[in-house]
Length: 534
Image 1: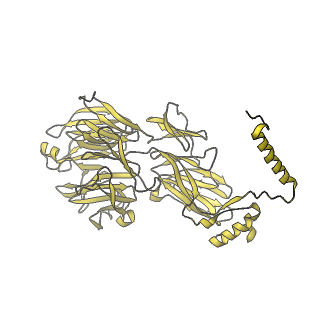
Image 2: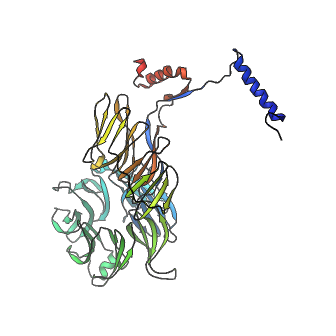
Image 3: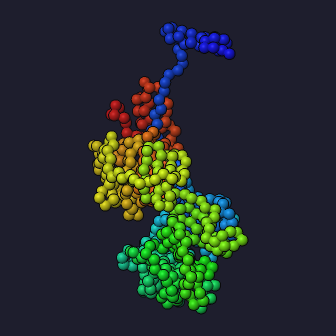
């Protein structure tokens, strides 16, 4: 065994050391090596490096498939075992808004509404891998889309600015009603087409008031026939302190209903039962032959948002807690009132703290420990404190602050004009953070990043996340930023060089050549000269 400086290895080390010392003592010796530095003038963009969680809002089943929205993703899930078959994304996470509504219509296509942004129609020729077939942008539609419905043989898209048929996109209805529009789904009725606006049911033709409801959907034809009503509806009427849910007849008047002191997110007739998805529980009633709700049963469940029947006695349930299959009654598969194939994920966050390496975030639905840029796991750690939002900060080039309304960001750069910005769609700003001398802004629809460049405040980029993004955390090391959204999950983003930028904007040069090289690069790229060359 060779010892230090002994044996064959030792002789080789002595030779190398001798050569190095010889070069150092001889003035004519050139090692051929010189330290270099990188000049990178490429513009930056904001990219999500890592992401976990989000809210599963819409659950639907069609034939033998379970389609589940998960933020901007559509999961195709096996209804037998709850395993994910595939996931459909129309763009990288962080570039597309979350799905606000989804429906398989009579034309055999799956329609998904990406909140305020676009509607995408998916071909279901291969039902396990829906393929985008056509897209309508908000600009094309003339409204910010939120909901999709089918009535009168047409596909309808509704949003705050109006409602229109995809078959006749130039026909915009109800755009001129007084006050703020809060339009729901379009429904067939004896009066013609009707729609909800806030807490009112109104006629599409002339805006006449017909009844009170915040959400209205037709019951399946089989149930309507059984209870003796050709036209019957499931309704939800939401108030400030209570929600009423039940059935309506063709005159848009209640047949039967119950009131709860909390929000009801969704109500659906599945089989012979009405299901209501509440804040902390599922409620279900059997519907008798007179259309009355009987034998109510309550299923405690925090964080549900929607429910669909995957097969007799089994239901798909999803929301902020994750997703699961629920067995209602005992059968050969097992006991009653059991959740199967449960997949948990962080989707509702009301508190968050960090130690610079990890983030602990969660709510009464569960706490999650996130290693920044890495793994996410459920945690038994207690979460009793919360991090206060940062509403102002100081950078090397200026000051940034959120106004008292939470609607306006003001940046005051040194020696340059004031910069004022507000989120789209009337959103609110919640918090600020800084990394690599940039301002990171968390708001209702994600994160925007700003920098001072070429004598002005400009946008570095943004990421779209279902919000609100209430917390931004700078890790101890590096320039990444961890974001925590109340309903959009947890992850890490970073301002990185634009991979599509001109390659000539990045070079490795000797230190003594750096100033000259950067000046030439700026001149060639049309950028402002560095101060030494002005």
